[in-house]
Amino acid sequence: MKPIAPRAVPAPVTSPLRGVRRIALELLLLTMIAVLAPARSWEVLASFMRQHPLIRAEIIAVVLTTMALWVRRVDIRGFRNRIGAAADHRLTGTPATAPAPASGYTHYLPCALYVAPADERKRNRGEFGLAPGVLYTGPAGLRFEPRRIDHTGRPAAIPSFAIGPVREVTATAVRATRCVADAIAGRHLALHLRWGSQTALFRVPALSEALPRLHARLEELKYGPLIRPT
Image (tube, rainbow, N blue to C red; front, side):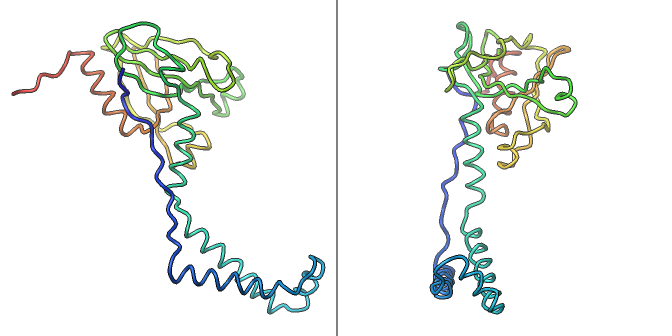
């Protein structure tokens, strides 16, 4: 069985704090140590700061500059990718944790189903739940299987269900309410499947890569394999 799209791989975190910036940071740290060294307790330090407003202003400037240099050395894109990859691992299933019910499925897509809460007040506030699982495709059609095995050992909270008939299924990317991890990772879209009068919304890792492949799979299931001229 083949994956429709691979899991997102977090980018390596680099450390570009070198050369002049590193020397400047070391000098700032040495200055802080030299200024704070005479203080033997927080009370003495507070009294010292009140008596010397100029030194207090210099220390604040040193601290703010140090923080600015630290922020600049952080790989923000790598950090966001790592957050997104951690959420993908937590909020999706695999064929081992959400196995297909029978033969006839050749491809799978790790995902999580958006689930409306039973509480009407929560629904009105736009709150939602996520049910990790796997979306399977193949000659047998499309089917969502919830994750049955997780770190808590609890059974799936929702039943599996078929999607289709395949000829009626359309797949699009839509803007959806995001979890906190997706907000940090900068993810804005979800997979929207529609068939007949029914719809389902899925959180999918690397949706921009998965959606074209899912379209190709749906076209093949609807109309047969594409015959390329030789």
